[in-house]
Image (cartoon, rainbow, N blue to C red):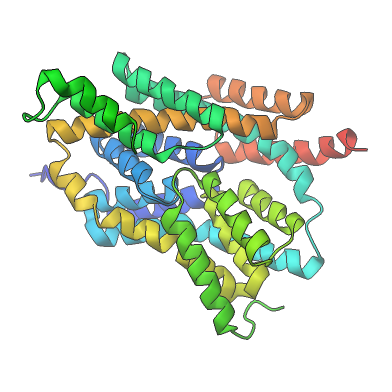
Length: 389
C-alpha cells in the first residue's frame, strides 16, 4: 500500500534535477524560478503549488538570491535539512565550477575578447526566455483574482520606474492581502483602512598561497552582500560594484563588467559572479571564500524559518500574506524583464533575437533552453563584429 505521506520522488532525483538546472538553466532568477514551476510543479508533480508559493514568498522577503533560496526551500519541503543542503549545493556547484574555469582562462589569457560578442546574442535571447517564464508564472499564480492583479501591477510598475526591487513593498503587499482577506479578530472594520495605510507606508595557479587577511576581507564583504541584499540576482550588482571597485579597488571597471557578463552567459544563478570576482582577487581560495560567504546567509535565512512556513502555511492569515507577497514578487519579476530588456536590446538584431526566442518558445513547447542559448551565442559571434566595425 502506498504511503500518502511519502514524496513521489527520491532525494537523489531532486539533487540530480538541481544539478541539471544549475548546469543548463540560463536566464537568471526569473527564468530559473519559471523552470522550477514548470518541471517540479506542473510536469512532475513533486512539489505542490502551495509549497511552491510559500517558497517564493520566503525567498522574496529574505535577503539573498531568489533562485538559490527557492532551490533550498524546495529541498526542505520533503527532506528537511539534508534536502535543503544537498539541493542548494547541487544547484550552485555547476555554475561555480564554470565561472572558476572562466576566471582561470581570463587570468591566463589576459581577458575574454569573445565574451562581448557572445553576450550580445545571449543577452537578447535571455530576454525572450525570461519574458516567457514571467508569463507562465503570472498565469499560474494570479488567475482572475483582482486584488492579486492590483498588487502585481503595482510592483511591476514600481520595478520598471525605479529599476530596483523595493523590499518594503513586498511586506506591505502581504500585509494588505492579509488584512483584506483574513483580518485578525482584534482589528475592527472601522480601523481596517487605517491599518492598511499605516502598513503600506513602512516597510597565478588554481591553488595559490593563501593570503589569510585578504580572504578574511573577502569573507566579510561578500557575507554582507549575501545577508543584506534583497531581490533577484542582479540586485547584488550595485552593492558589489561599490565594494569591489570603489571601496576596496580589487577590480577595475572593465574587469567588473566582464565579471557580470560571465555570470549572464553561464547557467545557474546570476549571483555566481561572486565566484569569478573572488577568483580574480585571490585565485581559487578567493572564489571559494566569496561564494561560501555569499550563499551561507541565504541558506540560513531559508532553513531557519522554513519549518514555521510549513507548520503554519495553511493558516488563513498566513496564506493570504503569502498570496500577497507572491503576487508582488511576480510583479517585480515581470517588471525586471523590462529593465533588463532596456540594457540587452540595443539595436535591430538584438530585438529580432528576443522576438525570435519568444516565438520559438511559444510555438515549440518542448524546445530546450540550452539549444536557444547556443544558437544565440553563435548568432552573437557572427553579428557582433558586423554591427561594431
